[in-house]
Length: 268
Image (cartoon, rainbow, N blue to C red; front, top):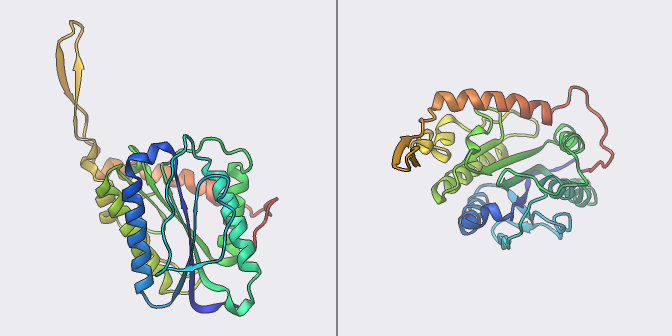
Protein backbone atom coordinates (compact mmCIF):
# COMPACT_ATOMS: atom_id res chain seq x y z
CA UNK A 1 0.00 0.00 0.00
CA UNK A 2 1.31 3.46 -0.88
CA UNK A 3 0.08 7.05 -0.63
CA UNK A 4 -1.30 8.16 -4.03
CA UNK A 5 0.36 11.26 -5.45
CA UNK A 6 3.35 11.08 -3.14
CA UNK A 7 6.82 10.85 -4.72
CA UNK A 8 10.40 10.72 -3.50
CA UNK A 9 13.38 12.05 -5.45
CA UNK A 10 16.80 10.94 -4.20
CA UNK A 11 19.78 12.86 -5.58
CA UNK A 12 23.31 11.54 -5.94
CA UNK A 13 25.66 14.26 -7.14
CA UNK A 14 29.20 13.49 -8.24
CA UNK A 15 31.76 15.74 -6.57
CA UNK A 16 34.84 14.43 -8.32
CA UNK A 17 37.41 16.91 -9.57
CA UNK A 18 36.39 16.22 -13.19
CA UNK A 19 33.20 18.23 -12.64
CA UNK A 20 34.82 21.03 -10.64
CA UNK A 21 34.49 23.67 -13.43
CA UNK A 22 30.73 23.03 -13.63
CA UNK A 23 29.75 22.70 -9.98
CA UNK A 24 27.84 25.99 -9.90
CA UNK A 25 25.99 25.11 -13.11
CA UNK A 26 25.09 21.63 -11.79
CA UNK A 27 23.77 23.06 -8.52
CA UNK A 28 21.75 25.69 -10.40
CA UNK A 29 20.32 23.08 -12.77
CA UNK A 30 19.34 20.74 -9.94
CA UNK A 31 17.79 23.64 -8.02
CA UNK A 32 15.68 24.50 -11.07
CA UNK A 33 14.66 20.84 -11.36
CA UNK A 34 13.50 20.75 -7.73
CA UNK A 35 11.57 24.00 -8.15
CA UNK A 36 9.87 22.59 -11.24
CA UNK A 37 8.88 19.42 -9.39
CA UNK A 38 7.61 21.37 -6.38
CA UNK A 39 5.32 23.38 -8.67
CA UNK A 40 3.65 20.26 -10.07
CA UNK A 41 0.67 18.45 -8.62
CA UNK A 42 1.39 16.02 -5.80
CA UNK A 43 3.71 15.79 -2.81
CA UNK A 44 7.45 15.43 -3.45
CA UNK A 45 10.13 14.79 -0.85
CA UNK A 46 13.84 15.03 -1.57
CA UNK A 47 16.78 13.08 -0.16
CA UNK A 48 20.06 14.65 -1.28
CA UNK A 49 23.51 13.06 -1.17
CA UNK A 50 26.91 13.49 -2.77
CA UNK A 51 29.40 10.80 -3.70
CA UNK A 52 31.61 9.71 -0.83
CA UNK A 53 31.41 8.01 2.54
CA UNK A 54 28.31 9.94 3.65
CA UNK A 55 26.14 8.92 0.71
CA UNK A 56 24.28 6.39 2.82
CA UNK A 57 23.76 8.65 5.85
CA UNK A 58 20.31 10.00 5.06
CA UNK A 59 18.10 12.07 7.29
CA UNK A 60 14.40 12.51 6.67
CA UNK A 61 12.99 13.63 3.37
CA UNK A 62 12.53 17.36 2.77
CA UNK A 63 9.66 18.85 0.70
CA UNK A 64 10.97 19.80 -2.73
CA UNK A 65 9.99 23.43 -2.21
CA UNK A 66 12.28 23.61 0.83
CA UNK A 67 15.10 21.34 -0.33
CA UNK A 68 18.54 22.74 -1.01
CA UNK A 69 21.25 21.31 -3.23
CA UNK A 70 24.32 20.21 -1.25
CA UNK A 71 27.63 21.95 -1.78
CA UNK A 72 29.83 19.99 -4.16
CA UNK A 73 33.10 20.23 -2.32
CA UNK A 74 35.67 18.59 -4.54
CA UNK A 75 37.52 15.35 -4.16
CA UNK A 76 39.95 13.71 -6.54
CA UNK A 77 38.00 10.56 -7.35
CA UNK A 78 34.40 9.38 -7.32
CA UNK A 79 33.36 5.97 -6.03
CA UNK A 80 30.01 6.24 -7.79
CA UNK A 81 29.04 2.55 -7.48
CA UNK A 82 29.74 2.45 -3.75
CA UNK A 83 27.90 5.74 -3.22
CA UNK A 84 24.87 4.60 -5.22
CA UNK A 85 24.77 1.25 -3.43
CA UNK A 86 24.89 2.98 -0.04
CA UNK A 87 22.20 5.47 -1.06
CA UNK A 88 19.82 2.80 -2.40
CA UNK A 89 20.26 0.66 0.72
CA UNK A 90 19.73 3.58 3.11
CA UNK A 91 16.72 4.93 1.23
CA UNK A 92 15.15 1.49 1.07
CA UNK A 93 15.57 1.18 4.82
CA UNK A 94 14.02 4.59 5.43
CA UNK A 95 10.97 3.81 3.31
CA UNK A 96 10.58 0.34 4.79
CA UNK A 97 10.29 1.94 8.24
CA UNK A 98 7.33 4.10 7.22
CA UNK A 99 3.71 3.09 7.79
CA UNK A 100 2.52 1.45 4.59
CA UNK A 101 -0.11 4.08 3.92
CA UNK A 102 2.56 6.81 4.03
CA UNK A 103 5.03 5.24 1.63
CA UNK A 104 5.52 7.08 -1.66
CA UNK A 105 3.82 5.88 -4.80
CA UNK A 106 6.86 6.75 -6.95
CA UNK A 107 10.57 6.68 -6.07
CA UNK A 108 13.17 8.24 -8.35
CA UNK A 109 16.96 8.32 -8.10
CA UNK A 110 18.71 11.03 -10.09
CA UNK A 111 22.45 10.50 -10.53
CA UNK A 112 24.53 13.36 -11.94
CA UNK A 113 28.02 12.11 -12.71
CA UNK A 114 31.13 12.72 -14.74
CA UNK A 115 30.90 9.13 -15.96
CA UNK A 116 33.98 7.67 -14.28
CA UNK A 117 34.07 5.36 -11.29
CA UNK A 118 37.31 5.26 -9.35
CA UNK A 119 37.76 3.74 -5.94
CA UNK A 120 34.61 1.64 -5.54
CA UNK A 121 35.48 -1.43 -3.47
CA UNK A 122 32.23 -2.51 -1.81
CA UNK A 123 29.76 -2.70 -4.66
CA UNK A 124 30.80 -4.47 -7.84
CA UNK A 125 28.86 -3.99 -11.10
CA UNK A 126 26.90 -7.25 -10.71
CA UNK A 127 25.91 -6.58 -7.10
CA UNK A 128 24.82 -3.04 -7.84
CA UNK A 129 22.92 -4.16 -10.93
CA UNK A 130 20.99 -6.71 -8.91
CA UNK A 131 20.29 -4.26 -6.09
CA UNK A 132 18.87 -1.62 -8.44
CA UNK A 133 17.00 -4.16 -10.54
CA UNK A 134 15.28 -5.52 -7.43
CA UNK A 135 14.07 -2.05 -6.48
CA UNK A 136 12.88 -1.39 -10.03
CA UNK A 137 11.12 -4.72 -10.32
CA UNK A 138 9.53 -5.00 -6.88
CA UNK A 139 8.94 -1.37 -5.92
CA UNK A 140 8.80 0.55 -9.24
CA UNK A 141 11.88 2.66 -8.49
CA UNK A 142 13.40 4.49 -11.45
CA UNK A 143 17.03 5.54 -11.84
CA UNK A 144 17.85 8.50 -14.10
CA UNK A 145 21.44 9.30 -15.02
CA UNK A 146 22.84 12.58 -16.35
CA UNK A 147 26.42 12.05 -17.53
CA UNK A 148 28.44 15.22 -18.08
CA UNK A 149 31.56 14.39 -20.05
CA UNK A 150 33.43 14.91 -23.30
CA UNK A 151 32.05 11.67 -24.72
CA UNK A 152 28.72 11.62 -22.91
CA UNK A 153 26.97 11.45 -26.28
CA UNK A 154 27.27 7.69 -25.90
CA UNK A 155 24.31 7.66 -23.52
CA UNK A 156 21.42 5.42 -24.55
CA UNK A 157 19.44 6.86 -27.44
CA UNK A 158 15.67 6.69 -27.85
CA UNK A 159 12.51 6.03 -25.92
CA UNK A 160 12.54 4.05 -22.73
CA UNK A 161 16.13 4.80 -21.71
CA UNK A 162 16.58 6.89 -18.58
CA UNK A 163 20.07 8.16 -19.25
CA UNK A 164 21.15 11.30 -21.06
CA UNK A 165 24.56 12.68 -21.92
CA UNK A 166 25.58 16.33 -21.67
CA UNK A 167 28.55 18.20 -23.06
CA UNK A 168 30.68 19.68 -20.27
CA UNK A 169 29.35 23.21 -20.73
CA UNK A 170 26.85 25.30 -18.79
CA UNK A 171 24.37 25.03 -21.65
CA UNK A 172 24.72 21.25 -21.91
CA UNK A 173 24.16 20.81 -18.17
CA UNK A 174 21.12 23.09 -18.25
CA UNK A 175 19.47 21.26 -21.16
CA UNK A 176 20.16 17.80 -19.70
CA UNK A 177 18.75 18.61 -16.27
CA UNK A 178 15.73 20.32 -17.81
CA UNK A 179 15.11 17.15 -19.84
CA UNK A 180 15.44 15.08 -16.66
CA UNK A 181 12.87 17.28 -14.93
CA UNK A 182 10.45 16.83 -17.83
CA UNK A 183 10.89 13.07 -17.58
CA UNK A 184 10.17 13.15 -13.85
CA UNK A 185 7.04 15.18 -14.50
CA UNK A 186 5.79 12.65 -17.07
CA UNK A 187 6.56 9.73 -14.77
CA UNK A 188 4.75 11.29 -11.83
CA UNK A 189 1.59 11.55 -13.91
CA UNK A 190 1.30 7.79 -14.42
CA UNK A 191 1.10 4.87 -12.04
CA UNK A 192 3.97 2.62 -10.92
CA UNK A 193 5.37 0.30 -13.62
CA UNK A 194 3.46 2.11 -16.37
CA UNK A 195 5.58 2.99 -19.42
CA UNK A 196 6.96 6.53 -19.60
CA UNK A 197 8.29 8.08 -22.83
CA UNK A 198 12.05 8.48 -22.54
CA UNK A 199 14.28 11.32 -23.63
CA UNK A 200 13.60 12.48 -27.16
CA UNK A 201 16.22 12.84 -29.87
CA UNK A 202 15.67 16.61 -29.76
CA UNK A 203 16.43 16.69 -26.04
CA UNK A 204 19.55 14.59 -26.53
CA UNK A 205 20.80 16.82 -29.33
CA UNK A 206 20.17 19.92 -27.19
CA UNK A 207 22.20 18.50 -24.30
CA UNK A 208 24.86 16.97 -26.52
CA UNK A 209 24.85 18.75 -29.91
CA UNK A 210 26.13 16.61 -32.80
CA UNK A 211 28.28 19.60 -33.82
CA UNK A 212 30.13 19.55 -30.50
CA UNK A 213 33.13 17.77 -32.00
CA UNK A 214 33.32 20.04 -35.04
CA UNK A 215 36.40 21.90 -33.98
CA UNK A 216 39.87 22.70 -35.14
CA UNK A 217 42.94 21.26 -33.58
CA UNK A 218 46.35 22.85 -34.02
CA UNK A 219 49.03 20.37 -35.01
CA UNK A 220 52.62 20.54 -36.16
CA UNK A 221 54.11 18.68 -39.07
CA UNK A 222 57.49 16.95 -39.22
CA UNK A 223 59.28 20.27 -39.71
CA UNK A 224 57.62 21.84 -36.71
CA UNK A 225 55.39 24.10 -38.76
CA UNK A 226 51.86 24.51 -37.46
CA UNK A 227 49.06 22.96 -39.41
CA UNK A 228 45.35 22.87 -38.74
CA UNK A 229 43.31 19.71 -39.03
CA UNK A 230 39.55 19.61 -38.69
CA UNK A 231 38.16 16.98 -36.33
CA UNK A 232 35.40 15.05 -38.17
CA UNK A 233 31.84 16.00 -37.36
CA UNK A 234 29.96 13.45 -35.24
CA UNK A 235 26.56 13.50 -36.88
CA UNK A 236 23.28 12.60 -35.24
CA UNK A 237 23.28 9.36 -37.22
CA UNK A 238 26.73 8.38 -35.95
CA UNK A 239 25.76 9.29 -32.40
CA UNK A 240 22.62 7.21 -32.69
CA UNK A 241 24.58 4.21 -33.95
CA UNK A 242 27.06 4.47 -31.09
CA UNK A 243 24.31 5.01 -28.57
CA UNK A 244 22.40 1.93 -29.71
CA UNK A 245 25.51 -0.17 -29.16
CA UNK A 246 26.03 1.39 -25.74
CA UNK A 247 22.36 0.92 -24.86
CA UNK A 248 22.72 -2.80 -25.52
CA UNK A 249 25.73 -2.88 -23.20
CA UNK A 250 23.79 -1.04 -20.50
CA UNK A 251 20.80 -3.33 -20.97
CA UNK A 252 22.98 -6.34 -20.19
CA UNK A 253 24.53 -4.49 -17.24
CA UNK A 254 21.29 -3.37 -15.60
CA UNK A 255 18.91 -6.19 -16.59
CA UNK A 256 20.22 -9.65 -15.73
CA UNK A 257 18.80 -12.57 -17.67
CA UNK A 258 17.53 -14.13 -14.46
CA UNK A 259 16.74 -12.18 -11.31
CA UNK A 260 19.03 -12.94 -8.40
CA UNK A 261 18.66 -11.84 -4.80
CA UNK A 262 21.31 -9.28 -3.97
CA UNK A 263 23.56 -10.08 -1.08
CA UNK A 264 22.63 -6.64 0.28
CA UNK A 265 18.88 -6.26 -0.36
CA UNK A 266 17.06 -3.01 0.19
CA UNK A 267 13.37 -2.72 0.86
CA UNK A 268 10.80 -0.07 0.22
